[in-house]
Image 1 (tube, helix red, strand yellow):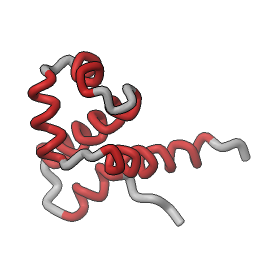
Image 2 (cartoon, one colour; image 1 turned 45 degrees about the vertical axis):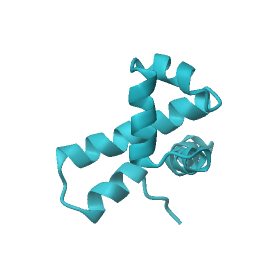
Image 3 (cartoon, rainbow, N blue to C red; image 1 turned 135 degrees about the horizontal axis):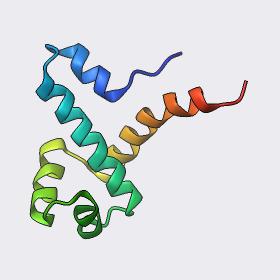
Amino acid sequence: MMQVDPIDREVKEGPRRLWAICRAAERNEIARVLEEHSQNRTHAAMALGISRRTLLNKIKQYNLTPQACRVFLSESMLPAAVAAAPN
């Protein structure tokens, strides 16, 4: 069963617009960086090059709970992991 990339899922559910693609990419990047920094918001904000307040607003906007971050990562990493697996 092939997993659908979270970016593709959001684009296919609505009109294909640049803002939808950018929004999905932003959400996935924030989730990745939060997980990379063990949910430390100050360090994640510095890594993203945004203020902590902006990060907090985006976390609220995208409803990025720690569990949601792990789900986004597992969904987005699975196709890459499958493609990179040796034959």
